[in-house]
Length: 396
Image (cartoon, rainbow, N blue to C red; front, side):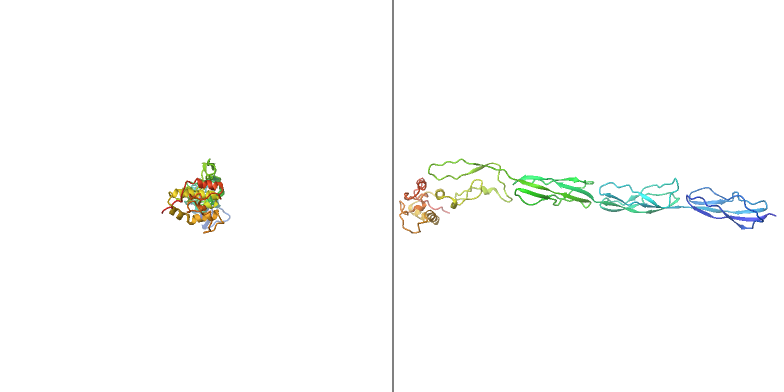
């Protein structure tokens, strides 16, 4: 009778995309006689996707001397392992994101296969590091995809501002301090905060324009290039006033007018510096703003000034009031300055005025005196004074 033989197919496996392994079998019951052998081969069900595929007997056979029994098995196709690693990226604040790319760092794709989807990154636009994520990047189910991430780094945006050179005239208000972006640019709707400043000073010269509080956010690297504010001289034209006098009179005060330009006011200073009167008739020099004392005038001009003041104070009074005025210390001082050789209380006929009330020290104030020992212009000044007695002191 026929010899019974059982063969059992070996279970097989492979990775998706690899070639099929050889399909083999084992005699699991019975045996072959003499030098007999199998003919033909096993076969498996068609398919290349991940899964299990039956291994069939196909053409495997023995001669008619055998009764052949076949026990099948499966070929299992497993997923193909692939690892992708994201490329580290960087950009400048405000710029568009670079393309997010990756590399296959382990495994490989089967010819014709490809990735779908793209990487993504954590949200944010400020300075810092943001994780690059797998996003929608994928392969088919025939693969086991592993992902290794990286970072997108956003760096500071470089901006250079250069101050505009400025100028002004001494005494004028400062012009607005402005600047230009000379390198780089601002992103989005960003803007500067703060303002430029300048070195202190108001005199003619150059003053550095400084960064002051001008700033940008920490998303920027701000470089500052300075300039200068130049203060120029203030042009002023003064024109002397024409003057006249009568022969023998004291010279009138020489005055002038500002006919072009103006004097500058310092901070906190008001225009009352040009007020001409102090209530006693004393005047500041026109356009100068400084009161002149009588001590720096020639004698005859000082006496003429005193005479004018007394004329404004009061009308002439009697001899008793004249004597009281003539004895005042300010007139005694005039006597000592004009006649240093005459001591207080010294009897001298120069003291004898025509009315016995006033000495020569107040000649020109309106008190009569002998004029023989005076220069012509002092005598004329006294003669033209128009006063026949010393005026009464000003009453409070």
